[in-house]
Length: 232
Image 1 (cartoon, rainbow, N blue to C red):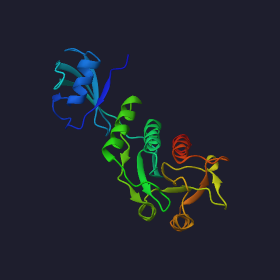
Image 2: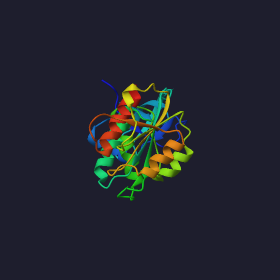
Image 3: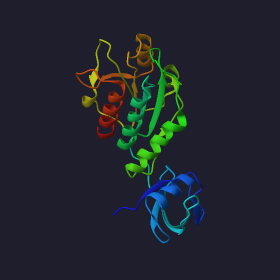
């Protein structure tokens, strides 16, 4: 059976670590772990520590670091720029699934037709951490604060840049594209990108793509894009 894995933002060079109160409570009260039992820790940047409990305190559980392993980052870097949604629950669902799929970067976008601009960063990042742990990964996606879509378009350094939209015009199915290992995909709000935003993207070498024959919700489009890009 795999060892339980938890997140830590502490420096990982010490031989002993005191877990956060939340993690301590989960280990000692929920999982009923005791002195001598093992658990794993990751800092979200590839480090995987195997530790054993030396003090089973429900507020300040202390562990001894037995082994430290540094796992390489994913060979494919997928960045998803996606409009903030009016329904925060739907955006949170996207964050969870995109993390499980293995995307490297998530950029919440403020577009001309974005209906909601409030963004609870700490809550959203906590969802990413939980999804990383649930899927047994050690690399946490980079989550940005919301940015104006024009900013993202003008400053992208991805080697392959794609924009999904519902406008009439020539678009290639994403399944038919030869993909690189550093891709950025932009997904618009419920009302789609504006013509001006699409034009700006095309001027900055984004390729217009289609995700399929049906019109998808923003968060569904994000998950479909993440899946196709990671496995393409």
